[in-house]
Image (cartoon, rainbow, N blue to C red; front, side, top):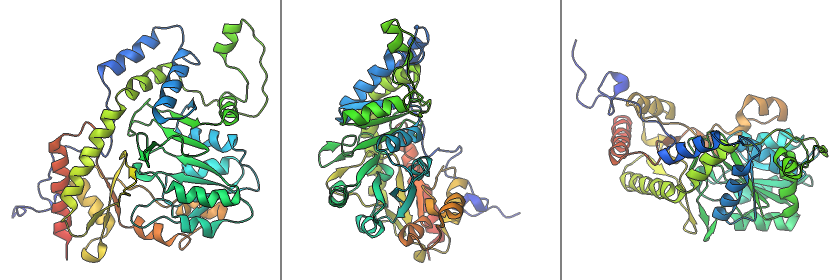
Length: 401
């Protein structure tokens, strides 16, 4: 049998760029993180204890918000915000088509209708022009998703919302540590939500946070995350009472003390994590600047991205392969690429229940067939970054017309 030629794609039998898979994202856990969790595990409080409040106060200070409410995950944070803002049956909420399903699901949980707006073709952020086109007499809110870690055009979205009395949820699951016109993401909307999944800027395993400057919204959020009950166990213990009242229908969306201890320890490392993410993104930017058929997302000059994701768009007109073929070839080179995201309006649930489908958001549908997420996380070495660039150059070069 003739051996494969030098430079043959691994998917065709050649030698892969890497001997082991490089994930697209991964947590970074230090000895201090572990010790912080152990200390709480040895304490009297594993949940609804002092670490929760301590994490909330520290997080609020970091993002410049008055209140922070810790919850069990980023999806719970979105649900809490939707409830606190009194989104409900008969309401419509505008959501970008390119996002994780939870950005729209939180609207459905409240009995309201998500209306999908298109995205800007170069940033994949919510397109204000598309938002205006989707507004009806029933529109109550906008969910602004800071896709990949770059803040939305909040000035434009607020101008649209202010004229119509709309409220805004900032879905900043990707954007902890990002800045918009010199302000940290976290106090730019009525309520902002974050995720602490292991691939995000900091992690608590699973976990989330809701931030707001509004006292009433914060109070509603705290009640909703604890079954709709006005006090938690620690508060009743401190007062020496047993009595409590359920005033609304809520959920058990509490975050444990040992998760909050991990979050506190991780929060102290946030600036370093984000700095490394930006450094890796800059290396990618330089490498792909002269590479035909590969275009990174455009970054607005008035914002600083915290780079949860690094996404490229393929110019398929210059290639002999589809995005899926390029994706498979990069995976064979042991580069753990991913795709973020399938447009939400194309998911079977939404097509079946809300009559959405192809043609609703043409830009999102066009870019979906062309986007690939490359590995990016703080623990990546310079060699890892070089491997990604080498693999992209190898694969795209092979398929270039």
